[in-house]
Image 1 (cartoon, one colour):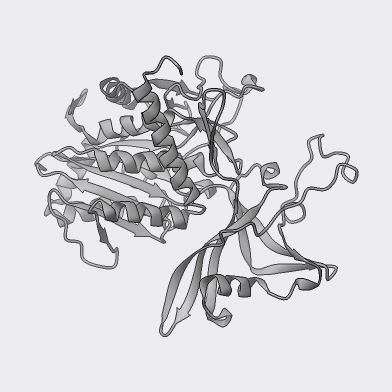
Image 2: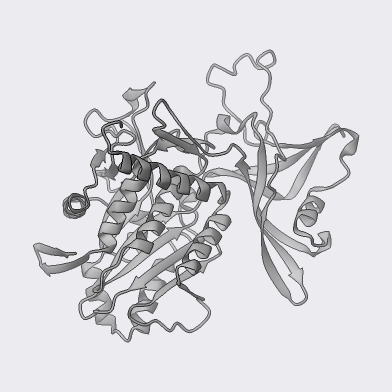
Length: 449
């Protein structure tokens, strides 16, 4: 770390501070997409609605959202005779707990808990004994309209208390958490339990309780993001998986451009629960957007298929770093470390999209951008996770590689990564957005920068 120049170290830290500020403002996918939207608006991007006609011109900058939890933003080149799509995908959601419709549970007329259910595969222990709050969206009646309102109760509102070791002697012996029993947050206690949950929401939003028609609300960890370590080499925060990659793709899109390409940042919701929703990677969102871009530019169906044949996708979702206490969980030679570069992930069973061709392309891009790469594969005797790249391929097939940034404690409510790696990711993604990739023969791809 100390061998880096002072200028580069300063850039690592500034980039990480910007990331952590973004994370602190993005407790849910709804807030992340709203923050993307504001940044894109400030840079001159025009919002498109799926329900309206799209006017797209060469050289233009646009974005479209679905469900307010997925967003695709794109820049259009000006020389589009043999155009292709450069795409970076990531996801906006993280494992958490969702508040149920009938939210309140009374315990012996002394406590009020919130009734929640698990969203995704979280590390339960990381949610205990720390201040939590609630964020998401609330649907409110306003005349003849149903209006979406973002909600973030920005104070310590809830806690999930542990059972004392005296009452649960198995707490340190591999205790199994029951989501309906052990993971319900405490909201209030005693004789002051007069405000019901919906009234709290109404007061926060400044609306009438009876006008609240629905909500999608989630718990989030109130611990502030931090930079730490002997040389300040680590960052920790909630939602690093996968807003770290999403943030990097946004920064790269703002900075990158190629006249002969259409550069796209695609951030999907619901990866943590399988992507099979109207706004997930398994939905029609990516395909619909690509087809409508092609059509709005006056291109033919054949032009669209030609473009896909030369297109390239970076499927960006964080990766597992070697754990200092348990290095045995990772492969002997295909393992990764924080602050040592972008991770290229591969899997023989195709849980990741990477193959020889796409890995060769990403190596060429990284070499041109001076970005270090490292490589990840699961131990052959362990079943690993999957991500959204191969799911998105079912909607729009192209060459693709799975990448990520190394981190510890994936799916914790407070994750850890390296201070350098966000900068490396931005540089690699920008290298793609600065390029035009063309299939020139059955056995050849040309990369022009």
